Structures are given as C-alpha cells and as structure tokens.
Length: 110
Picture (cartoon, rainbow, N blue to C red):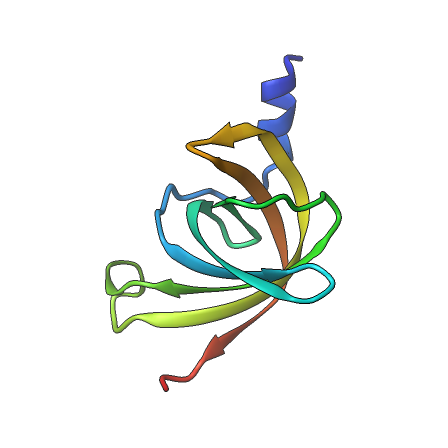
C-alpha cells in the first residue's frame, strides 16, 4: 500500500481545511507564537509555525472558532497536546506542524 494511503488510513476523524489564527505556546520557557491553521479535526490540528519545534514536544494552543463554524458566536478553545510531526521544509518561511489534541477547554468571553 502506498505511504500516502497508509497515512490517510490512520486518520479516524475528518479534517477541515480551515485557516484560523492560533496562538501557540511551547518550549522550556513557554514562548508564545502566532500561527495559522492549515486544517483542523476533532482530534488534532495542523498549523504553520515560523520557528522550529520537535516531534514529541508538548504544545498549548488557543484558537477561535468563528460563527460560520459554531452557528452562534465565536468560541475560543484552549488545547493542550503534543507534536506528532513537522512536515518537510518551510513553506513561505514556515513549517507545517501536526499536533494531536489531548485536552481542551472552552474559554469564557473576556
């Protein structure tokens, strides 16, 4: 079976190609970076990040789901997970980072 087909078969939830702003926190000192999602699913996210991050690293990120998705008002979601893979070379100076979501919480409006 081709490698791309094997990778596709591992995915148990549908991915949605959504370009959403996301705030990503990672590293020993908890540095925070702004990023943009490439796609989102119920169990994970892929986003473009300017700086290097290692597969297996813990990562926290907060994204805002817009009204077009929630069918109500915008909803902020804080997630904690880990990096599964960093894809290839940079695209427009950014790396594609795939992360699994281990925990999440909906944040109240501030």
